[in-house]
Length: 264
Image 1 (cartoon, helix red, strand yellow):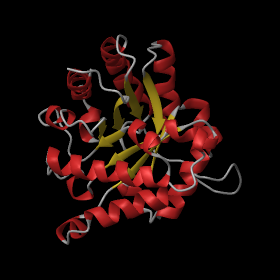
Image 2 (image 1 turned 90 degrees about the vertical axis):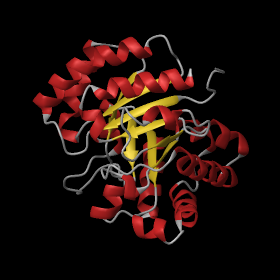
Image 3 (image 1 turned 120 degrees about the vertical axis):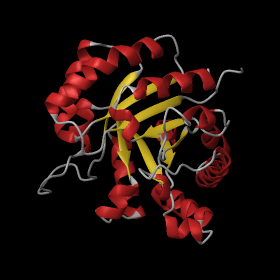
Image 4 (image 1 turned 135 degrees about the vertical axis):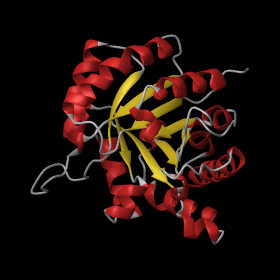
C-alpha cells in the first residue's frame, strides 16, 4: 500500500474518567504498548487526553517512557491568558504539560453551550501557544434526519476555523463526529464519513488554501471500536480516529495497530 501522506492520528478522549491514580496506572500499562507500535513510524501519532486533574500524572508516565510519537492532550481550554475565570484552564497552563487540545467537542457544545465563535477563539488561543487543536465538528440526530449534515458541518468549519494564521495551519486537526453516533453504538458508514470529511476538506480549502486542505489531518469519531476501525481507516480521506469509550481499555492499542496497518 502507498504510504499515507498526511499524519495518521489516533487520539483517546478519556472524558470524565480516571482520576490521577487510575490514570497513572492505566497510562503505565498502555504507554509502552503504544510506544512499541509507533517508534518505527514517523507518520503516526497517538494522543492521550485524560481529565485536567489527571494531566500531571499522565505527563509523569510519559516523561518516564519517552516515546516520541505518544503525546498528551487536554480535553478543553479557555481562550483568555489569565484572570478571574474560576475552573478554567489558560492556554499557557495547558502548554506546560500538553502538545494537543480537543476543542469544540459535541459534549462541550451540547452541555456547556459552546458556540462556533467561542470555538474559534479557543482555536486561535491554542495556536498562539503552540498547541495542536483537534477541532470537533458534527451534526446531531435531528439535523442528520433532516438532511442538514453538509450545511451544519460546513458552517461549523467556516466559523470555527476562520482567521487562522497561515504559519499555524499545519498544526490544525479536525475531527468529524456525528453526534448521533457518539456513545450510541451507531457508527456512520465509511462512505458517509468519507463524504462528509471530503466536504470538510473542501470547506477548509475555500477558507485557506488547497495546499493547506490537502495537508490537513481529518479524523473520524463516533462509536469507533476494534471491530469497525479498520473499515474507516481504509478510506483515503480519513486520517485517523478520535476515540471515546474504547480509549479507556487496552483496546486502544489495537485501534492504533489497525490504523498503522491501513495507513502505512
